Image (cartoon, rainbow, N blue to C red; front, side, top):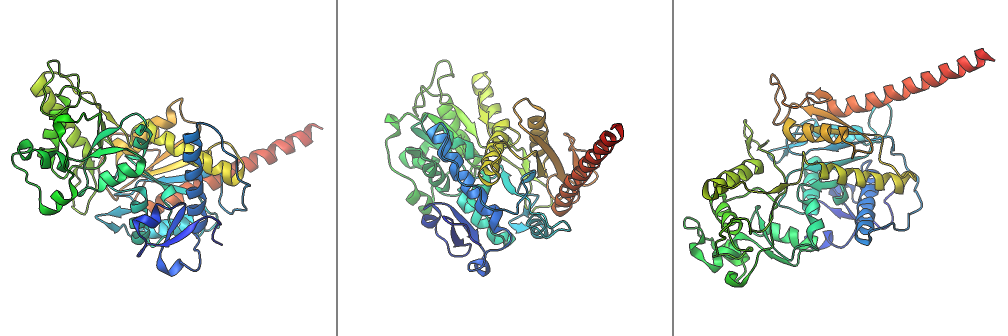
Length: 428
């Protein structure tokens, strides 16, 4: 049954306006009238995400709901990277659809397991990413299940008013930032439109010009630079970033004497490479970040200070833990995250490193168990720089491994309990 308060929207016809109206689950058209096995988890986590955001905005507790009847286990959960694990080059990896079916109860134990998606990919809202994945995997999914690299940036809304947002297609990142609540969002096209000499080798297309806003940047102070998604113009975007980092208090056309007056610089993630349809991994945002840093040092003889979110940064895993904790509290009445979260990724330097370091830190409330798959950046025959807890050929093998590991743990615990009871009886 569909959960009350949740709107079911078609993955082929829903609009951005509809996605912005409240809790929703994106549904393949054939499931619109009849919820699939995936609806329960998607709806539960969507409501948990809204409740978590509401609680954090109020800086305190909100009235807990009455826990619903559920068939989803609370003991463990899965978190997935997307590119290289579920999707490659915009198309589903063959085992991905089956892996989702296994999680939604089509396994030998008939257990349903909760899951979320933690991706460094950006440039779109969580809602848009949700629509894409629903289409690609033919799956009911909710925006609440998505944590993107730039998701934690929404927490900067109250701190910075005028921000420059870099990356993505056209002005999509501006739309994402405004959706988060940023009041005054600038994109590189605005700056080039104001002064065409800013980037000597880049001229705006008619479409880019139409999406760019006119303003006088001689009178504008940029308070922060947010790289939301991969740059489509490394030379032009880097020029604008360096102009601001070397400026006096974020005012274009000025130069600082000390080169330490520029606005803070944030990157949604720090992946050096990522998996695409090309047979070899392609350069990612981490490479762009290093390029900016090297050029800034060559020009100023100073190190550039910047901050990266996404994996492997601990803040991303903390947010995921808070989401799963809210879900477990809402659905099972237990104020603690699932005991184990299995993170399935394809990039040792971000997915595996981040999972391992967070699990071993004193900030983790539970165990995060890393599983590395061979369908993306990491390939068979190579040795990962960061060692996973387990390795699998593909995502369905990773899911089955995690479920079986939990079944074995439960069986061993039962055996120990029976043994302890028998020892107690013997002592009597």
